[in-house]
Image (cartoon, rainbow, N blue to C red):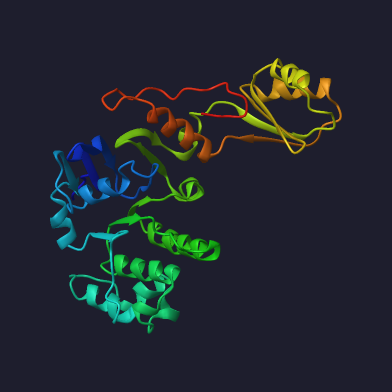
Length: 322
């Protein structure tokens, strides 16, 4: 029995002239994991996927799928991919497109099952040229899963989908992953990574800057956010007073809504209510994936290109969280 990880990237580096797109990525993905690949535009997400699939040759380092050459795993039908650059023949119907790809594999799903998994049954007879953006994404997903892969790469899979279509897509994806398949998906929708990934790998400038569960990644931004509707006038003196409360890191007021970021929300809230008992609609929340994303990626944007990654820093600028 092959116990090799589904993906192993070692010292992976890719340059295009003077541009370094991927800069020493080390990543091991075990079978059955659902990995979200996050990062700002230009972080190296799509290039990393291309390297892992053997679609691009690394400048240095190695990429393995199931312990061997990615191209071998693809030929065996163990890998499916839904890439941004993937195109379907415009004159074929959705069903014909899926059947064409199925014919190239040894043990594919039936065309009907692939269409059902991708929620494409109702558009099976539509020609690709007539599909909307969201329908096209669903058709591409059907093409990606028809080989019955053990590992699936998805690059921005829900782009162009509306809210309901995104929800439907992830319901179908859960059916796929519940069978123990491995999925790596790159997305700009941070809520998707928080809700559906077992593990988040965050890239910035071609490097891995975070790797952990959603909770672990969000924990890099310490403290909590207290929001309340203020019944008092906002003045510089009030702002200065609130800034001295226990645990307070930043204070902001907008349209009558007070927001405080605190390292000790319990102590801050007790002191805040003791001083201002006219507050109402109080909310205390943990930081979001958006906050972690900004903390981890923006802190790298100011680093020299050859500098080693550092720990994210916290700015005390009023109203800003870095």
